[in-house]
Image (cartoon, rainbow, N blue to C red):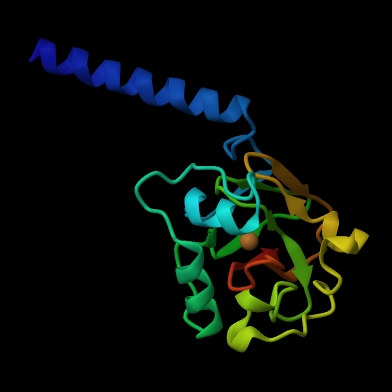
Length: 183
Ligand SMILES: [Cu+2]
């Protein structure tokens, strides 16, 4: 009995230690911060051969999406669900900071849009569409779009969201979408 109790206590300490660590990093346990993660599973070999040496950093060992598969799925309107923002919907109090961390291997954007639609990389749009929604048009040549960019391993804090519904998507992978509702 005593041994079991000790083990339980130890497990509890580990959980607490983990929570403290996450909070110190601003990972969502402190009041006023809501955590969002960007996930992808880019395959460094195929992405970097076609797009440049640092396009995909290998963070998703064992679950890699080859560039050709990603493009084929996106063009067909059946994009890879492993490329995603989590959670899909978030409800927050006014004043809460939405902290978006890129845990994927590629660059993403977290761009507020009036309505979801095509991004600025035609091969990743359904049917290879060349027209982007207004908030994404111009790509990183547009300061407004560039400001919403999140490099691999970095984060973007979104503050000052007004009461109501806000839609965000990635302007590169336009099926990466989420909704933030401010109470
Ligand atoms: Cu993206």
